[in-house]
Amino acid sequence: EAQVTQNPRYLITVTGKKLTVTCSQNMNHEYMSWYRQDPGLGLRQIYYSMNVEVTDKGDVPEGYKVSRKEKRNFPLILESPSPNQTSLYFCASSLSRRADYNEQFFGPGTRLTVL
Amino acid sequence: LAKTTQPISMDSYEGQEVNITCSHNNIATNDYITWYQQFPSQGPRFIIQGYKTKVTNEVASLFIPADRKSSTLSLPRVSLSDTAVYYCLVGERGSSGTYKYIFGTGTRLKVLA
Image (cartoon, rainbow over the protein chains, first blue to last red):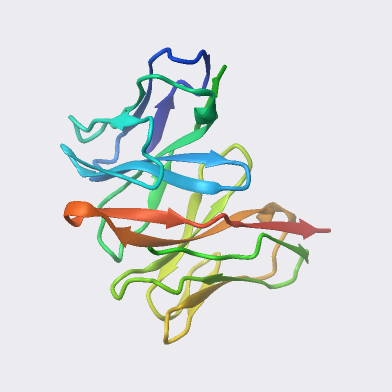
């Protein structure tokens, strides 16, 4: 089944404890992206990757890191989480980032709470 | 900076046609407009995309005027299961030829029986 998977689905952690949220897609997609969703703010892009080893900042990259060493994986790293990073996180992938191709497939989401 | 503006919420009754309009004054010349649907606790799901005039698929129609500064998502004969948040999406070119997406805050559609 074609899908985007994220792990963990739920995480409660404490301020300053490094964590990684994994994202994997099995559709051979070039484009991958991380979003966070907060009440009243909609979806905001954190980082995105056009292809392996090509990443760029979205609208809210502060406090996050990403890497794209393999096409299928795009982990999100929080080196020193803070309470303002408590949010619902979505990973997404798309076949490519052509202007006429905007269908992104989203993962199930990771609900992160930082105490 | 590409940005979209949508109504925060809308109510409708089952069987009615619903039109949700999005403003995107700074859309790039070659960019498409895309709409997504999101149910609670799920990731967004692609509905439709278009460049100009009208696009129709099995679930919705998308109307884009000639100036492309706005677009209207049309949902025919909505049902209770269409209650969701609908997002209008455009792109923005980032550094080094990369491309990022700009979601708006979405329109919360509530369909009433």
